[in-house]
Amino acid sequence: MFRLTWCARVVDSTVLRRHAARRMRVADQESKCQRDQQFYTSQCIGGLAQRLFDRGGQIIKTSAMSIALLATLTSPLFAQQSKSVTSVDDLLRSVGLSKPSMSGAPDFNLLDPNGTLVGLSSYRGKLVLLNFWATWCGPCREEMPSMENLSRSFGGAGLAVLGINQRENAAVVTRFMKTNGLNFTTPLDTTGRVAGYYRVYGIPVSYLIDTNGQLIGVKSGPMDWATPAVIGVFRKLIGGGIAAAH
Image (cartoon, rainbow, N blue to C red; front, side):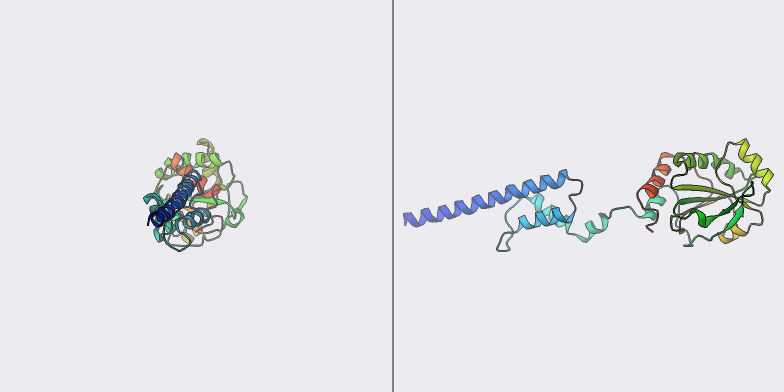
């Protein structure tokens, strides 16, 4: 009887040591996952799951943290929330832009005040801020300095700002731009034809066009385009490769 009892205790002790070792490996894996910015990848998930189950398919006694972590990693909600990028709609909504009712941006070819032909398709591959304005429009004049600051923030790298002037001649537009120190491109929509393409019924109206020529955002009325939040969103759209992911 003594030997039988002693053997049972030895077996129990061996099992406990094995489980203790497994718990230590689980704790090490948790710590590694937390230190790693990519610990939500399949390697960490798979490694943790492998250690949570023994050879007989029975879950070992481990910390509540491990079980909670595995449940989180394998839940549908986590899979949805752990996308690599924030959706374009949510990103733009955070700075006051709405989703346009149209999808593809209508192409156009207009002359600027210097007589140079400006075509929207020539900006493919860049994020485009397309603004409809006029010199007599107070809210337009209010927001244009911030558009200039936005344009300068990127220096033409990945972003083009186009201010489509409505039904005014080249001399008026040139004088206004020079007086106010504005340098972004201003195509002249002298007949209002392009405004009709974009369903513009009042100004200012601004559209954001992604690198594939798709409309991704619209803003009716003036806006401060040079706030840190707005510039930050534009940087994400350009530098993060989100601009075409819509």
